[in-house]
Length: 285
Image (cartoon, rainbow, N blue to C red; front, side):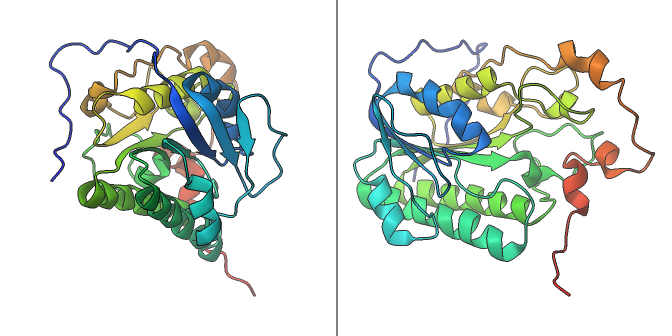
């Protein structure tokens, strides 16, 4: 058995930058929005950053390897993971889509990543989960890490599966994972909901760094959110990561609140998952 890490009793302090970076770090989903943000920032943490996606990527720079890969191809994923020390797994569909599409990229693909990690002895993963794992909770609730999961769509279901899968691979094989329930990571918050869910790019990069180098990770779930005034999420149970967000959505509040207010009863004002709770089903005529 692999006991879960316990948060420290003292106030968490941001850890020092690692003095011994990883030899080779894999980043999946490197062509996506957050993949493009993290790709250059991860170079400080590894001698080689191997980047992968099914979509077109920028050519390899110094200290990089570019390996296109369809995560639904088990053999290709096995080759992708070989010789890597750790994985930041962002790959997959990041919006609500028909179940068949989500199944291949987010469910089958994530299984292939964990199977390859097991086969090649990778001991630590950072898994991009999502706030949509708890999207059917009301915005009036404040959730800790033990709150029941209430996925708001097929995408949220796939991320809930990924959290269970990562737990299984920790319990069975000792592969440590940080499941990042990412809120809304953009240059700035776009609407009222994002005033609560916003995660700045700098805070995202710092959270990933903390997860890669925390002395004790085990299986940890953490909400990916900046220090926003009205956040719905409590990360006290993940204090052992040492993650201390530095940014806040507050400087953007006045501009965002000038937008027309949605009508009463609009899911954007009711549910933590916002509009995701109404998307689909995706039936063809």
